[in-house]
Image (cartoon, rainbow, N blue to C red):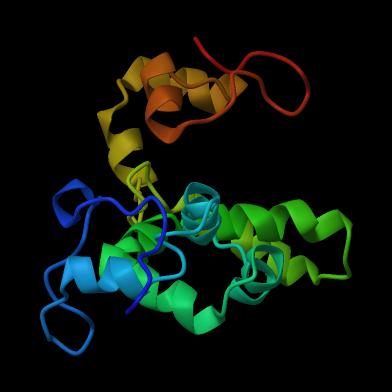
Length: 177
């Protein structure tokens, strides 16, 4: 007779099981839970949190006494893979944090910072681009504003807000009328 694992929840009480595995076969939540070493693990919440935060599965295996395969099987069964992908920001933050501890090229750090800047709060990659036509901005200036620009290098406040310039020029004075 098989022994039951301790503190098993009923399948209806399980959290977030997906309906299909990666090979499109239905996942039986009760069967998964019965055989899954993570579902009955006393530190299940910590294991799942570590996985979602991009902790190395090898490190997790050593820390919690689990195999990498069991971690990935559990993640697929509970739909944690997509949640982890959306949390790519955590992985990039780890790279940036380690920059002072290991020898990393400036290019790698710059790439990680640039990548993290393109990820929104939902973990989605957003390509941001902004194009400002200075010719169009100068065309909008009044003749008086053009004369002021030619004489002192000052531009109207709306011009700076549009371009995103700083309020002072390199000599420390104001370049806004």
